[in-house]
Length: 237
Image 1: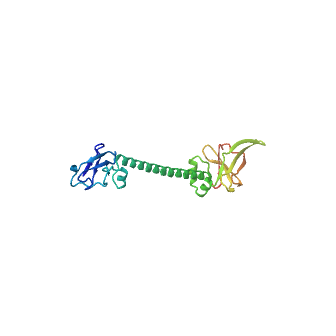
Image 2: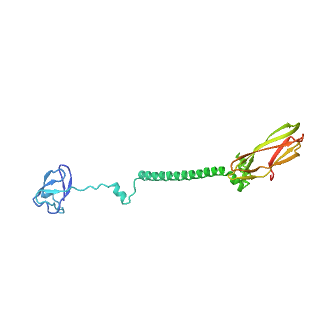
Image 3: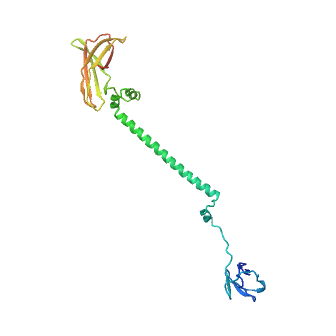
């Protein structure tokens, strides 16, 4: 049997036989309004109310779907929320990828800088072991010599000594390596305007300590008049 509260219109289901043939007073569980339910309004197939005197009957329960509960059982989330979650996940992946790429480049650049510094500091040792590397350093404007000895450009001056002309030559040899080097004889040549050698002589240089500079001074008496150009180098060169 279906009963309807005259005050709030809440509907109830009464158990079979709960109203009786003479009717009875019932009370709304929601607004506590009481009214008399006549027997003639009773449906023979109605369900009984629980109480014998004043009947308290519960309203019909309206079930409201819980979105979270639906999601928990595998229902599909709203399209907007799904897209937002996907976009956030993609953004996080992109950030992680950028961090990894930045780290790789930073490490690579650091290694290259360290290698360049080491190649500069150890340039003479590298050239001594790999002579072909000398041309690479020279192309970069880095002073380096095969064998580790660098000859400075000589200074020349012709003076009269006891009435005779004497060619004075002064230069220096720098040991660019970290080891003591035994320099060979340093040779000098005078050339005429055609490039032909018209005079030649050698000077013993001896040993030069690591990183040290040794001054070399020599003289050539009565130099040829046509000797206008001076060349120099170690004897093995």
